[in-house]
Image (tube, rainbow, N blue to C red; front, side):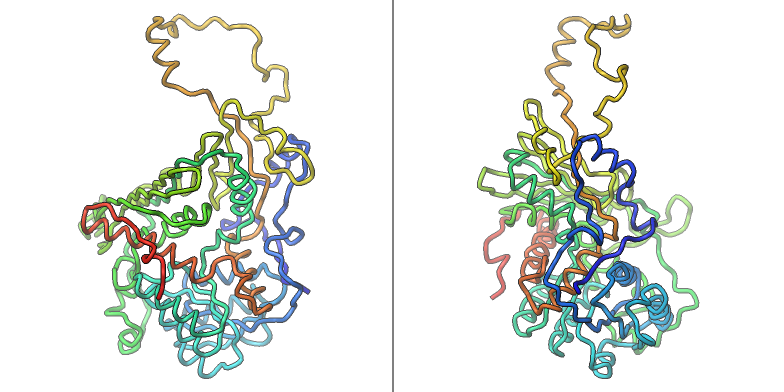
Length: 494
């Protein structure tokens, strides 16, 4: 039997798209809907069926996301161990696995303080999931691979290009399957947009892309260690200077890559992945403009970032059809409009996010996409808001006199008309994901391990390295204030 994904109950993590409203959309189109659930093909591989004994290193928030995503996979995973230097975190994680992933646990999940201890004592582990702070990704991945394990490592590959380069080398030196956690590569909604819409030319020549992740200040409050004791010698041996830095590691350059890495890496990676290329140049601006440790509006100290709390990047790509420019911003002082990516072409544009809020495709005037809504597996379905079911919703065939206050002179009217384009025709991507966004990516990794197939991976370490370079080179621009021109050597590992 193959690995299968189960559908979760609605929770804060799984609010991707309201099922009723989407099925209304499909009914409007008169077409079938591709439903990415356990009944649909998310990343179907061979029916390998072998159960993989897995361990999790890093039992914080990201590790729990991977555990929750894995819980929706019916078969193929057996959790046998966890490792974290915090005793309370590893104890809770093991308990969660035993309760919420009980179909993936036989007996008790063994707890370890360090990855070294775990790999030495739990020799039956076949695959290791790494969800630690970024600076540990490279050494932990190399260690696990050297022990004959396969590795699923969270993004960002590393907080340095040198660390990411060593991960590529480790992937070459050892034979384990090595997946990086850019989970959009396995998301059927993103795959549909790339393969069925962009590659098929529905958007025409794509000239611009835009992406953002805006997050409010509440997500950057300092974390004070309360009632948590970690042996100072263990902290030092694990690479941390203090328990305060351990709890707030994302603020410090020696542990992480800053917001452009934490948040931006997923979306900047999409620029490369969607168009199967890398940028030729980059200009970036930003800085530590808010989180300087000074008192905030409520009088309590703000976080003190070493790395920029806001970054804006402008990438230039050379596509077969011509130049494409991609703008990306990450802000940590406002949650305005959340996170999404937009792809804009001369025939249409698309906006997408892991959140179901953004799932639209818009046709430019003169482009009739009705043929793409036909059949059992349509490329597009009609946006329900654009369908008029009542007679009073249909456009008037007669002109309604405007109020006097709306009357403007002929010159002003001509200027207004010339500056505003006609409204675009709205459509929807006909794919829904009823599982956590990491679930298809975890499933893809498990299938690759079952099949012992590096080719089955949707995000191997080589492709992820190119994204890592694309993101982290923004810091070169910030230091010099100059445009950075990429060379092929930037994306290669000797």
